[in-house]
Amino acid sequence: MSEAQKAPRVVHTPVPRPRGKVRVRLTLVDGPLEPLVLEHGEIRIGSHPENEIPVPDSGLRPVHARISVNQDGALLRLVQPDAGAFVSRRPVQSLAFLNDGDLIELGRVAIRVDITYPGRDGDQPGEMQATRVRRVPPRYVLRGVTGSQFGRLIPIYGRLLIGRDPGCDLVIDEPGMSRRHAAIESHPGGLVLRDLDSANGVQVNGRLVSGSMPLKHGDQIVLEGIRFMVQAIDQIDAPLGSGDAGAHITAADGGRHGGNLVRVAAAVLGLAVLAAALWYFLGR
Image (cartoon, rainbow, N blue to C red; front, side):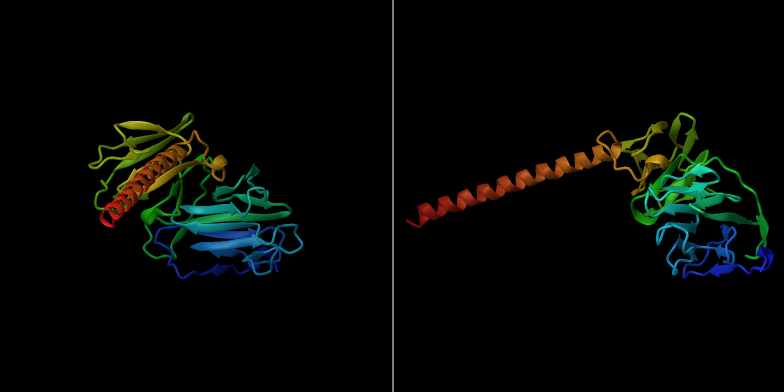
């Protein structure tokens, strides 16, 4: 059967595909499998036969990599950082955001990625138009740490607009959020966070931002009680060192908790001494 005659397999998940999001078609190059279309959810690639893309006798691990699609786009994640992969000739350390036309190489296995974007003027889900987008791979992501954004990985391309307005790149529908609350800009020298005159402000590592502030790997951003961590793609699986902001926050929290424990222990010891004294004098 020729590739043109292969009927795509559509992976359905219980989570409905949000309107206006992408559809990803994965084609195993020189392989017997039909193309697989992922609209929302996750698939596995590896030598185990129960994977959504099984490639036995390929030299891959049982589960070598995963591809997920959500409101932030398509993401390739290696199960282990040393598993080895390339996306369009670029080596992947741990994860990579996928673009239309990318070629994923996992050892001897090659998978072509085709991403279809919804037509802006179409009202029906079937009205789709293909658009070629060749983006420079992001160097940083925002990782959702708490609240409604927990677990999300948001790539930072150029300028990431954050707010309550549906037109923002990162929409946070919280009562205290301004419609256009803040923006994160990616420059050759790094990231810059700008507070867009929001009503309730933005905190970075526990400090209120006034105007703008440079960001680095490990910084923690709080927007209306929702915490994000800034992570560099090439360091995303590395533990935070003592010089990182996240480590300072943890150490500060640990110091406060340690001080509280000392005070509680002292109070308990004082009560024990008082009880012993009362028993000595009143019991005689």
